[in-house]
Image 1 (tube, rainbow, N blue to C red):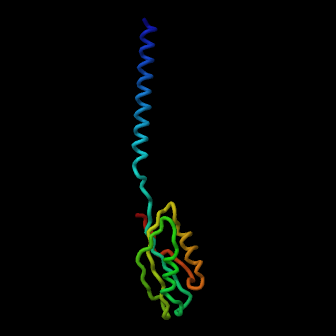
Image 2: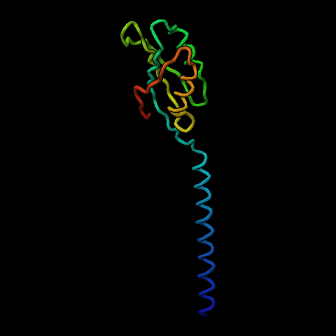
Image 3: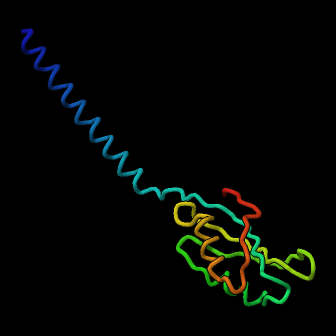
Amino acid sequence: NDFLAERSYMEESEAAARIKEQRLAEYAAKKSKKPALIAKSSILLDVKPWDDETDMVKLEECVRSVSMDGLLWGQAKLVPVGYGIKKLQIGCVVEDDKVGTDLLEEAITAFEDFVQSVDVAAFNKI
C-alpha cells in the first residue's frame, strides 16, 4: 500500500514539474515577443573651428555627414566664442549600445581641415 502511495506521489510531482516547465516556456515565449527597451542618450556637442575664417556651413555639413546606425542629428546653432570665432553647437540622439561619445568625437575630428576640437557640452540619458 505504501508502494502505491509513493508511486502516486511521484506521478503527481512529475506532472507538477511538467506543468511548471510548460508555464516557464510560455512565460519565456511571451517575454521574448516584447520589444526590448533601447537605452538612448541626448548629447549636445560643441564643435570648435580653427579660426574665424573656417567655413561654418561646410563644417556643419561635415558633422552631419557622419552617419552611424543608432545616430540621429538634431538642431544646431552657432555660438560666439570670442575674437569673431563661433563654435557649432549641435544636438543628437544616440542608441547607447551602438554609438558612444568617443566614436562621435573621433568621426567628427577626422574633418581636420575644419574641426579643431569636439567637446561634450551635455549628456543626458532618455
